[in-house]
Amino acid sequence: MTIIKRLEARGFKSFANKTELVFGETFNCVVGPNGSGKSNVMDCISFVLGKGSAKGMRAEKSASLIYHGGKKG
View 1 (spheres, one colour):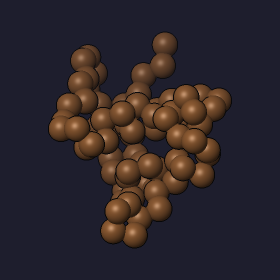
View 2: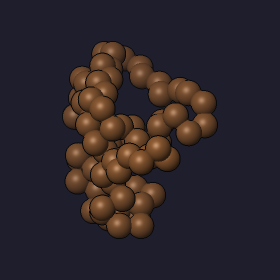
View 3: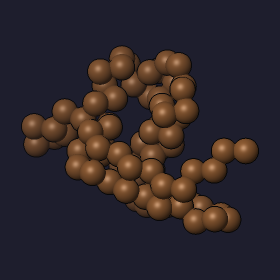
View 4: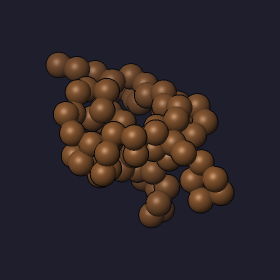
């Protein structure tokens, strides 16, 4: 069984700066308002574990997985 203890993301989708999530030992839940990056957390985990296609992670191409400055450029 795979156990994820923490996730560190930098430059992946909406995570421009270093973002670290520490997971507990039993039950974990990702909550937040629309557009806050909840799905991007799951996409990040899928990417690291070997999800094959960018479309499976809601991106047109692999380059879309890299943070490019957002709305402010």
